Amino acid sequence: MYSLLLAIIYIAFISLGLPDSLVGSAWPVMHTDLQVPVSYAGMITMTIAAGTIVSSIFSDKLTRKLGAGLVTALSVLTTAIALFGFSTSHSFLALIFWAIPYGLGAGAVDAALNNYVALHYASRHMNWLHCFWGVGAALSPYIMSYYLTSGQGWNSGYRTIGILQIILTFVLFISLPLWKQKNLPETQKKVAAKPLSFKEILQLKGIPAILIAFFSYSAIEQTAGLWASSFLVQIKEISPEVAASFGSFFFLGITFGRFICGFIADYLGDKSLIRIGTGIAFVGVLLVAFPTDIRLVALTGLIVIGIGCAPIYPAIIHSTPENFGKEHSQAVIGIQMAFAYVGTTFMPPLFGLIAAKFSIGLYPLFLLVFVIIMFATTEKLNKIVTHKKKASH
View 1 (cartoon, rainbow, N blue to C red):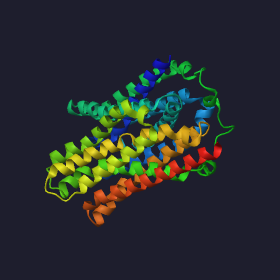
View 2: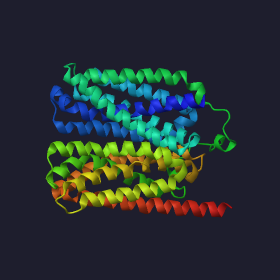
View 3: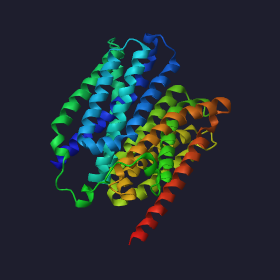
View 4: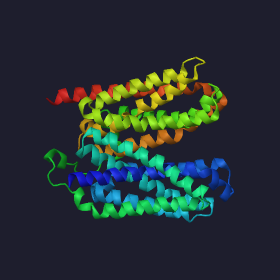
């Protein structure tokens, strides 16, 4: 039963990634069909992000009331309905409307699933599960591309992903009895008497540090991925075709890195994985910034940043029950997710403004600032947790 549920969770993580890259892959055609400017994509992604942030914050209350399994099933169902809504939309306003449940479903399932895995499974599974998320995120553009090139339109692409989500929803509802594990240690059965308020969560020792760290990680990942190609073309004078492929290699570095980390995660531990990942990302940023005409140095640097980013997100999530207590982990993970989405949503556009006003050459410096902040805040958390453990003995 343990293995069967784990297999279902792996499939669920692929499903989590499927909708994440759909808007970007389909938008070049969508905005033409809908007769709106290219820039309007930002309104859709911001609406999705807003829904995701809200549902992440309230995930603790939802999960306590309904359970992780039911929250996951209902959230995937909500996302599936939103995808079908996209597939039937023929106006921009309709897309904005359906973007609301799109985001609400994504945030709740992300927080619920990550906390469930952090509580009940080893660190290696957290890395491999997030690797599987990358598989889903990489797969959906190919599905969309098939429908666009075959002349069936972007609506059909959304419909197909929606059908896949409906199938997963059916599997999740059937699997609900598996989520109620009866043989868990007593320490894992204990939960706080009531859900924590946002103010109460912020009062937990170490919370400001980990929220800033999570925000910084998301700023690094999304800014690095979004602006990589533009930096390579404008500053390193690399052809757009080569730059585009290496921009995607950054995400492949994350996916491959998480696959490898799965084999060593239980041996090294979450704290070491975060430190090693941050160090590798630091080296990658230096390679991107290195003033040389040898273009392979910057291209290699991007892949190295991706490999460095790989273990950080899963390790921070997996260490949450240990750092803040199993009874608080769902609430903390929900807020962590919310801060991650804020970083994802606002930091790449902020760098875009900086690049427009000054120079896109500031790209590695922007990344370096957040790498340093992330290192400082995670180390501060380590000290707080160590002090807390010593005080309890």
